[in-house]
Image (cartoon, rainbow, N blue to C red):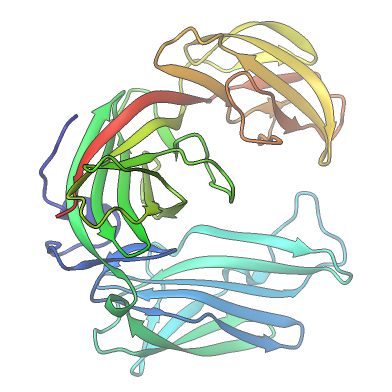
Length: 398
C-alpha cells in the first residue's frame, strides 16, 4: 500500500475547486450529488414549469465558491418523423444565463458538462427532450435566490430558485489523502463522511501517462450501477465488520485519464476508528496495437492490443435490428488482466458502437449495429481491459 500525504488543493484544482486550501471542516457530503464545499448553497426541491406542450424541469442547482452547477430538462413537440440517426433539436444549445442581485452571469468556458442527453417519447404525438448540465461562475456568499433565464421555445423562460446552505443538508466530511498504486493506476480516497445511515468515500482514479493513451471506464466491473447489482467493493472496519456499497455517484472530471466516483456504504459501527477499503478490479480502454479487420462471418485466432485471443464473428438479430456479433476470448493467459471487447468497431468502414444484453464478462459476445444486414467485414481496435487488483486503502475515521 502507498500512503500519500499531499496538498489537497491539487485534486480540487482538477475538479474546479481552486484557489484555497481545503480545511478539515470545509466539505460536506450531499447524498445523490457528492462532496461539495460547506459554504455553498443548493436547490432542495426540483422546480417544474409548464407552458402548453412544453415543460421545463430544473432538478439540480449548486452554488459553490468556485463555480455554480445547473441541470435542467426541457421537453416539447418532436418532429413528425425521427431521423436515423436522430438529430438534436435546434434549441438543445440555446443561451442560458443566471441573474443574481441584478447581475447577469453567462455560462463559463467549460459550458456543458457530461451527464446530459437527448431522447424521444413516441406518443402519439412524438415529443422530445433535452437534458443539459451547465456551469456558471460562483455566486456571492449572500445569495439566497437566483433567476435562471433560458432563451428557448416557446419563448423566454425565467425561473426563480430558492437556495439553501448545503451545510444544513449534508454530512460533515473529513478530507484525506490515502492512495494505492499499481499497473500505472493511482486510486486515492480524498474524503470520508459518516452519517447515521451511510458512510461515503470520495475516490479519484488517475492513470499515469503512457506512450499509448489509456482512458478510465469504471471502478469495478460495472460502468453503470443498476438497482439490484451485487456489491463490488468492501469497507471493513477495525472491529471486524465488513460492508458492501449500495450506491455509486459519478462526479465530474476534466481529463479522460481520470474517474471521480463517490462510493456509498451503510453506516459503520460508531465505535470504529479506522476502516479498509478494497477495490478488486477496474476497467479501462487502451489505444494500443494496430486495428485488425476480420471477415463476416469468421472464426480465427487474433492479436488485439497485446492480447492473443480467439475471435468468433457471426451475424445476429436483436431488438435493434441486424448486428454483427463479436465474441473474443483471451483464454485467461495473463494473470493481471483480461480482454473484454473492442470499444470502437467499424462495420464495412462505418464506425459503430457496442451493445449487449448484460455487461460482458471475458469471453462474452458484444454486438455492433449493421443496418444493411449484409456487411462483409468488421475492424476491431481499442480494447477494453479488466485490470486485476486489489487496490486497498487504510481509511482513518477519527
